Each structure stands twice: as structure tokens, then as C-alpha cells.
Length: 95
Image 1: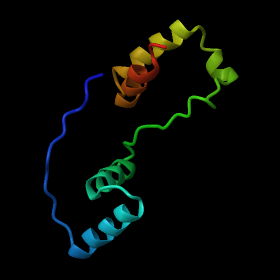
Image 2: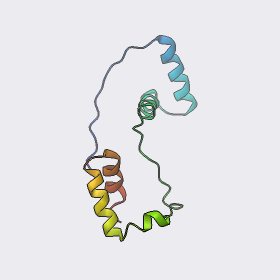
Image 3: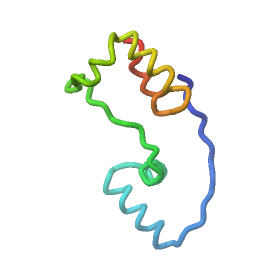
């Protein structure tokens, strides 16, 4: 999957909000930019799912879908309409 291009943008906000964001970013040991982008993604419901692959287990409902090939084909179809599915397929689909 190609890395998504980054753009630079400017937004207007109250100085007090910016101060609060800077403090939160500092507490999380991340840059202000990283903190704000993460907060925007969370707020818009766009954050990527975090998968702990060591503890990930396929439950019986998912296993009933069929073979790995069958599940991969279903994921490819879902990826056409859902960027999150496309991401997961690009990251884990070829193993």
C-alpha cells in the first residue's frame, strides 16, 4: 500500500485550546502535530484498529466463513468500499 501523502494546513482556534493541546501532547510524550492528528482521527472515528497479533484468535463465527483464501477474497471486496479494510488487507492479507 502506498504511503498516504501529507499536507500542511492551518486552523484557527482559541489560544487557551492550543495551550491545553500542547499540555496533553507533552504529557503523552508526542509532538503537538501527532497529538492533534490522533485526536482528530479519534473524534471522527477514523483511527486505524490496533491488532495484537500474538493474542488474536479466530472465533468460530469467523472460522465458519471458510478457507483463508475465501476470507481474503471477501476482504478484497470489502477493501473496495472501506479504506480500513484496504489497510488491514495490505498489512496482513499476504501472510
